[in-house]
Length: 487
Image (cartoon, rainbow, N blue to C red; front, side):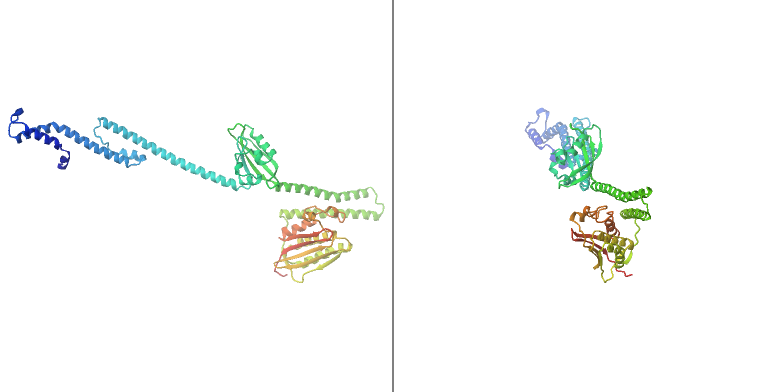
């Protein structure tokens, strides 16, 4: 208290009052007595006069100090925390009726409201950042998924310009990312027919989807078939709707469809030939053209031969169909390859002798064990040897040999026949394929070699290879996994 009094007491004014009291003569203004008494009276009067001012000044000092602490506390608080900080803080002005108190009260309310708005804005910003981050993650995930699709996908905007393309589409059509948004769909796809179909669909007012098949030439010059699905998307452009276009490669399905059609056509043709012969000779018999027993026997022999040919054709077709469908019953056991080949040699030998063709065996003296279905592998060997005999002129030679190759065994059928050209070598294993210029040499269905290939490769996991030169003969080589068991 004394220290406060020392610091707050108006000492200059007091000194002035004391000096004035000492200078006043005795008896002036009714003040008598010695100078000390006069000073005391004057000082008391001065204190009585300056008391209200002093207390007012002290109150202003305390309010100023409280205001400074209030402002310092406010400055040390984050704006978003002002509402919490001001809720429990007393105002620096205690007199509720004063204008200063009302001003501070309004300031406190405004600051608290500003703090609440700021907190709400920060909360909204944080929520917006989370949504933005999720949207960015979803967009990146969609980009990765779109980029990993093997099928080409493009998007066309409302003005008919390319707006999106995945890497598969870029590889197919040979454009880069710079083309996106810069060129029309016709220029990017290099197909006026496809672009016209997309633009026509975009003109519809309602969402529409259409699927069509197109043969598209890729950037590397290869033509492939695609099933193109175009789905429109609503847009605000004047040119119509946008569209998303999906391409699915159906080249394999188209090739299979074409092969199936060729297969049906070839099978029908092959069946018609023996059926026509059977029908013709039956009609001759019915009309009585066979007047003697020898003629009837001849006619019946032709009918029987054509029926056998038709039966072989049907059996081969059924065998190939079963193997392709995986429905054939396979019974594999460890077999001696040389025994199977020797049996095939004996089966083919009569037809070779009838054509005056020399059959030669060149078998390995070693045990060649294979894990095989005996009947099916025997059928493959017979087909290869019969084919060699058919297309070898009289006086030629067909050689059957076997060899051991490390973990594999092989056998070869070599002939000195007419041989095959490069194109025929590529197609000779196709169903019903027959070399046009050799059809007059021997009859056949064109299924023997395809069946042999299915038996060797699909059933026994082996390999069937062909080497041939036109006019010099052919060599069919079968390679099979080796079985180490004897028996």
